[in-house]
Length: 420
Image (tube, rainbow, N blue to C red):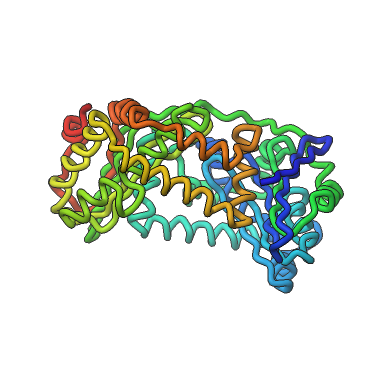
């Protein structure tokens, strides 16, 4: 994969991968800021900005933004995560400059008109309510809040209705002035493009972007904890969590493979033992979320309320097995193959490739080549899996449950069950 990079004088990195065999290109701006960069006073502002840039810039109003892109068959979207905000388009190769123009305006000249802001405030409030109405969605907000109590990483990406109602255009402009800067961004383009042409287009529009961001992230640390919410729903939502690892840990890949072995697919241990053998759950999986300075390992299940007391000891048993018993070579080889296939097949997508090079640059300040990633995966041993499993599962527990369970186990009961 031939990644070309040009750095403008203000520090903005422009990165491209040329794929002349394609007819389209994905272009995007990755900004190294998200809800983890907020605080109790401005929670949800990153997400509000993500919505509001679509409502008008110096050159285009909301209707013109969508029509200009869609009139040429393009697609435009954005998302906010805990540590990243992303704006991107997918265009035919002949319309790339239009995509660059619109994306640059989002960052350089958003207007945040009062009338549009009032309408979008109501849209976001409906989004918050929709999330609350979906048990399998809101349980993860409860889980995050319990795992990172009273910290930015524990707050909702969407914010709260109360906070969203208070934001004005001034709040949004102030946040962008503090958090949006050239050295805090990557402009990535992948597809039927020419690097020199993309650099020229971006430089003409973003060379005057401020160089440095003023914000500083607060310290984030996994705490563990409990959150039990009663709701009259048929299926109980249950998420268990443990301290994970950050992006820079040498155990990043062993932990990712551990998660795959436990709950990464239909052949994973938790799926086979709890769904296939016993039929206790409809959905079960594990996940490893890494952040800049900390991490979180989780296990999710949706199950009948009466199955909870049978389910928990079974999960605890599987965690002890993987922490104390050797992983077979067959299982390790299969999981590595699945993991490598997942990563490499994703890179056939222009968006996934742009996302990879932008995120790795903002996180590591360099690109990890596919060959390097494959080598790291191949280098993980069974002993590595046991070691990280013991380290993770002996840490503080997060216990999150949403449902109508009246006699559900207490936090202390669950801690005793999961003691390693």
